[in-house]
Image 1 (cartoon, rainbow, N blue to C red):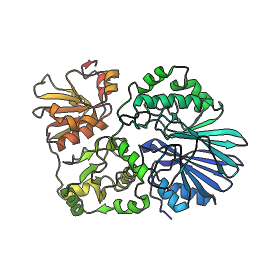
Image 2: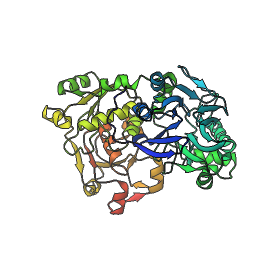
Image 3: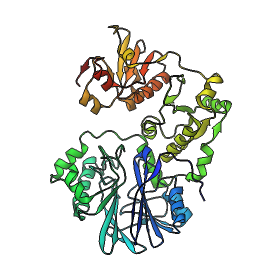
Image 4: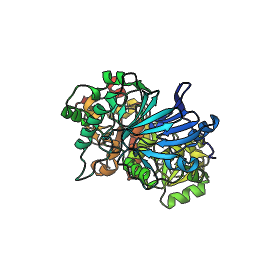
Length: 482
């Protein structure tokens, strides 16, 4: 039996129960990801399980049920699935839709195939577009469609991005978007209006451009409110879906490969990497090339030289996945409980090269003489903006994305480089000037600061009191449009 790790933001989202079936929706906030447990007459199907599978096993044991099917809507790119370990522990069959090929035993279902589950059935609707094997699973009771589990095909108010399964010379993003258009109209939109939509992700996920809030909906409401389900031509659909599509985080491609080949079992590595280190052990790993990941939200007490500061509370996995390569060796600094949870979150996205966390956190680092970046200034919003016309010695650095710059403008004279691009563009930032870094809220500015300190920049100023919109509202800056 897998021991359940302490999870702060994993929680039960929605329940749907009848005399014939029981549905449990799980939600993980840091990934904006939903997974599902469907039970009927003692038999269970788990849809898109996370890597930490204890929750599904515990629920099935508590309800005296047996996991029969593990249904994967597609090969996920944004998290590592727990499908293989769950299958090994329960004897359940892993099911993918048509065209799926994996390096472990799976059932490649046919389009329209019915999977028996107690007194209900689950139909496999092949819906290529997000990826070619993408499929929706439809729960059927008494011959009627009850609910559809859409994975990354359909979200609330949005659809899945069609740029992750591109193959040079075979599949273009436009071709995938075309498949998605057809899948939505030939399969999803033909479902009755009262069918419940249970999506794979919620607002904040990078798997869709602008996913709406909420945990579930109906087909009828999506037909009414989702731009992608309106009466538009295929060309209009492709243009709308691709317009303003941000680059996917770099780790997406790593995770997609892991899910096809099969990752290491979560239970086998959790205790190995989620361990406390003495200062000496911690620094030995750093000397051997490990990167310090500092997850403290408040760095006023000191900036760790050489560390990357990605706050535990500020979308840890998305930022780590955007700027740190998955193969990077890591050691963690943070409060003990938060450090452990940070490691859990990193394992969920396939960052397995973790040696542990510093016992005692920043206090232990500082009291043992850990090196700090002494020239970084953390100041108030007003001081950050107060250059006093000394432009020869100061420059603003804006690390927001292009879409934000187009929408709100930026500080006149600022160097604008999106956070994920900072590492590769340090040569565009002057080392002989004091850098005043800002973003929308301050989280990305801190990350950019730590990247630049690692690259030899010394005179840096940031604030923890807000960002661009606060500066503009208080009339502290002169804004220009992009």
